[in-house]
Amino acid sequence: MFDYFFAQYSTYPRLDVYLEIIAVIFGLLSVWCAKKDNIWVFPTGLVSTLIFVYLLWKWVLWGDMMINGYYFIMSIYGWYHWTRKKGDEVAFPIATISSAEKRIAIFLFIFTVAFVVAVYHLFDKFTTWYAYVDTFITGIFFVGMWLMAKRKVENWIFWIIGDVISIPLYFFKGYTFTSFQYVVFTIVAIFGYLEWKKISNSALVAKTE
Image (tube, rainbow, N blue to C red; front, side, top):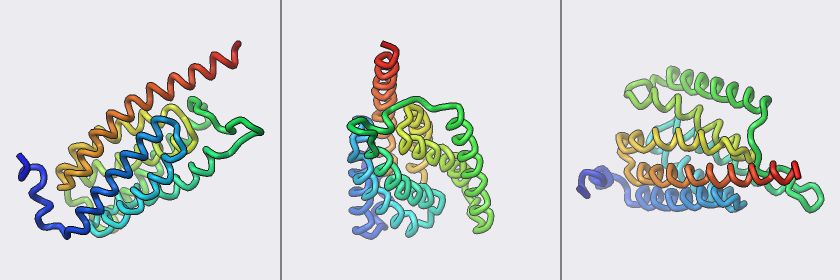
């Protein structure tokens, strides 16, 4: 059983294995902080994504590398966005997505998928079945990260969809630690959605009283 899940690591440089484990740990911390609406979601996420950008560049997984590069940039934006205040109140509390934001999310998804498809065609990367899945999942995660930075409840729906697809995807790619990470991500994302939904509903009730 151990060899079935981890045999591929026997050919990896030891440093890469350690880096992947560290990136997974910080990724899990980041998602847990997101669930708790804790600002540490962003600094922990920055560490995880920076390591993954390096590893994915080495592994020539450019679609995944672009996702993590985007996460890194959006983590900086989200860190700033979450700390903004109006007086003593948080300027952008947890809320549901607006109609305008839905349109932006649709555009972002379509644009991202089209861009990744173009990049994959340019560098002739459509050589495996999961390359096609990569294009779809990249769009899902791009929208999810944007909505998280905007503190929108629906970000968790995108994370859940993307995480569920990523579990077998990374396993077939040969990155077992990362695959296990997405199992935990999925569980935390479900609870994160329920928790943020509860907070959002409570805020709406408070406004109407």
